[in-house]
Length: 137
Ligand SMILES: [Zn+2]
Image 1 (cartoon, rainbow, N blue to C red):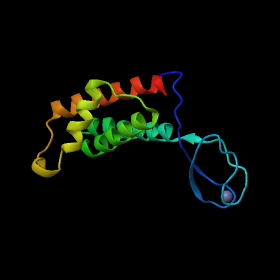
Image 2: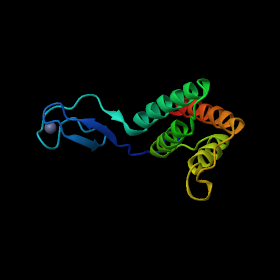
Image 3: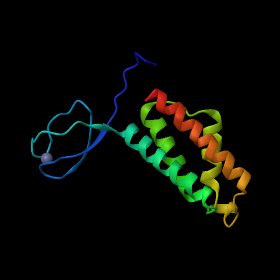
């Protein structure tokens, strides 16, 4: 995997013309105005940071006794995005929990509240997945 060449795209906002760009990290000037671009942030990193923030929100809601499935859903989606963009696989447990949490409140499961034991497991699994992926990015 390490020597495999992967093209990663980066999200960046041009400081000169304020256009949002999705470019290869090797691109150093804005394609629109030719102005210099700041250090690029890789998409997988952006998603990873989002996943971390949403996971933290989920943990805090859980502690406060609130429903954390929405924050967990967003954490799971961002975590999956980070894994996809970086070409990594999620830990098995993290993937299973991400799949499970994504289904909460949709389709046949609509209106079904996740039990606290389930939420506990998802928070842990997605946290483990974050930690694992963080080492690979
Ligand atoms: Zn520009």
